[in-house]
Length: 200
Image 1 (cartoon, rainbow, N blue to C red):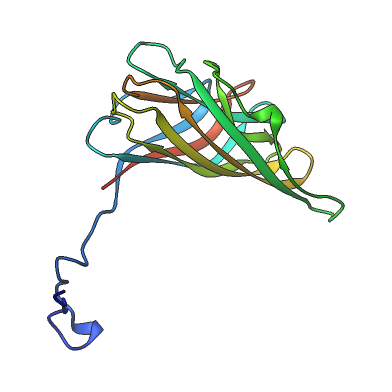
Image 2 (spheres, rainbow, N blue to C red; image 1 turned 135 degrees about the vertical axis):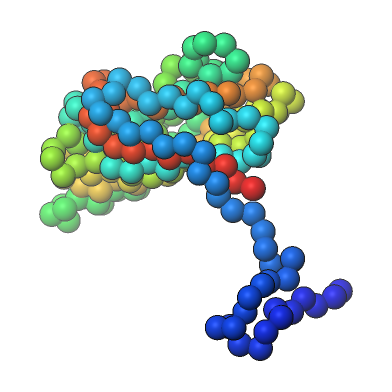
């Protein structure tokens, strides 16, 4: 096995790296900002260019108190209604230390559903309350396999606690996923930013 060396003797003087060190990274594809938005939809940029896509959520603030942040997928048609199966669990801790919790969330998983899938529990709509996190979508352009996705979010829950929710599942379709839509369980997305990245 050949060894690869940087072409200088000190880290501060390095001007280039050997090819085996350089690698993939995240490429920003698009950014969307909510402003009393009923949905945030990514309708382009999800194709065979990358095998992995990452959505980053920043301070998603609902108009309606205790509304869940949700996702759905478009599989070649015009509707966001791909059949999905997911699992969900969460960890929680109250501000006053009165509650700690770690549990499977049976009410937040879906089984062969075409409806929206929760990515969080109920986000508070107080001025300082929001949801942040990320979702990974794998090989959305495959026409052979189902489309796996994994999400982690943390919210300021409407009951004054932090709640980290872990969701994983798959769109149970072999058609390519070419669009992703985010929505609150009820009411609008009052504010927040979602960024889409491709991972090489």
